Structure formats: structure tokens, C-alpha cells
Image (cartoon, rainbow, N blue to C red; front, top):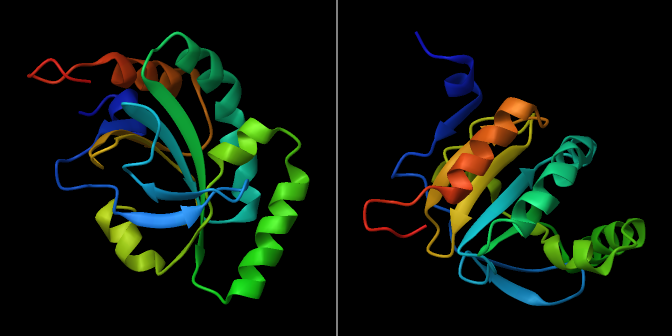
Length: 171
């Protein structure tokens, strides 16, 4: 029988990899992910719907101090939207920029305007109705995953994932 923790947060399979995507953060800087993630391990919040921001926001008060005490880590918010023409992307990004006063938060927000199906397949995401929280390294390896709003149990599992080393001693 699986424990509640096992149902909530699972180790990622070796087959799930963050695909290579290029986009701009809300400060206009072009990034190619996963290689441009700043941390050795990165907490990545993948959201598909605007209303899911409230679930991302439940994690941030836990993640910020966790990263401060976990060297080599960072976090990103990745709103994921279908491909669209440049004027529409500009309008959406402008609206998001206007709603985020914190420059560091705008740096961490990278909106993907992509064909979502291959992206979701690469990450083994089958449901757009909730956020997906991933720990990803710069090579694209997914070390850990959870879905939905923050809970203490998920937070403890995330902290363990950020401090776990692999067999070679790497994070």
C-alpha cells in the first residue's frame, strides 16, 4: 500500500526530461531552458491556467527560505500557453509584467508559448488542471515532482529532494 507521501510526491522516472525550450522572462531576457536555469537544482512551477497562480503562490513562502538555506538551488514560474502570434504574446506578457511589482519575480517568470503536447509528454504531464512542481537540473533531469497547492508533507518531500545526492555524489 502506498503511503500518502508516495501518492503526493513521487520521484521522477528517468524517462521524464525537461525539454529544450527558448523563451523570454518577464524582464525580456531570452533563456534556453533547462541549460539557463541558475541552480544545480531548480524548483520549477509549471502552470497552464491563470487561476493556478494561487496554487503557485502557496509554495513561494516555503520555497524562498528553503532555497536560501540550500546552496545551488533556484526557482522559476513557467506559465505554459499554446503558440500564438507575437502581438498576443506581447499583450499577455505586458499584462503579467504589470501585475508583478518585484523585479526578481519577473526574472523568474518565463512564459512558454509552445506546442504543449510534446512539452507535456517529455515531462510525463497528463493533466493541465493543476500545477506541476518539479525539481530539474540544468541537464533537464527531473529529480522530483508533485502537483497542486503546497502542504507541509509536500514541502518536506521537496526539501529532501533538494538535498539528496545521487550515487555519484552529485546533486
